[in-house]
Image: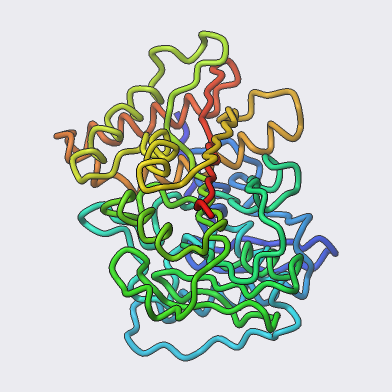
Length: 384
């Protein structure tokens, strides 16, 4: 059997308008999306050709992204990191590109506290690989939220990541003052005067520092962020004006078997081990199922939940569902590696982890195994 050739040292990134950038492969691995695309174990054309084409990123923006890759690679082990100049006029496009490439969940050079902690609390690390914002817009038919908020004056976006949701909400609601907060300061300067970013721990820092109550609090992909989600919901309730809304958008890692083809799969086995390991560190991957009851417990009324079963893999025939499924596989693929520590909590040896990972990987790309996952939106109102 002929030995597989080692991956090339360099890869070529191509913009929507045809500009090509030759980049050191190792520098691109800060992006979980590129890491998945270029994984030699995959059967992607990108991995075989060492060439990735981005139909949604212009040459001007990709040039800045490539600059960031080299910046990250150069300073990844440094304590003193110089600022990376980000042109204000490119902020919105760079936010979209960062979200597309998963850089909001990557190892941010500018935020040395960006990590997946030993206790399982995520800062920026877990859930990496989601083209989160794009998927959410697709699921919600282009809307940023489901809660029936109308011209909220003060808005808080918890775990804002790149800040793209906060910026777009501020753009669509010029009368709102939007604050995006996160444990990691990876956001570029806001291009809008009514949007700002703050490094803040919503679970442990004092909310009195905000000064005023909010009309709307938004959270997305916070499933593993908090030690005590109910306590955070109570803080949100206490910090909302009467009539204000809270909204949470999160995956719950249910196993959805659309047609009986995924029962007993390697992926199901991996997910079972992962859920057990996460429970050992007080991180329940089914936690979003409890959001409606927890919201009611702390005092919210008119609590609603919307559930969205989505495919995992490339098996759907519908192009939009196929894109969602493929994107979610990138996430799972990255999680398979980055959450190995939680599989160890189950007592799985390194060899066993590799076997689980390889098996789950094969299932995700098997068109005959119709895997699925569940996304949940919960919102509620503080009584008048």
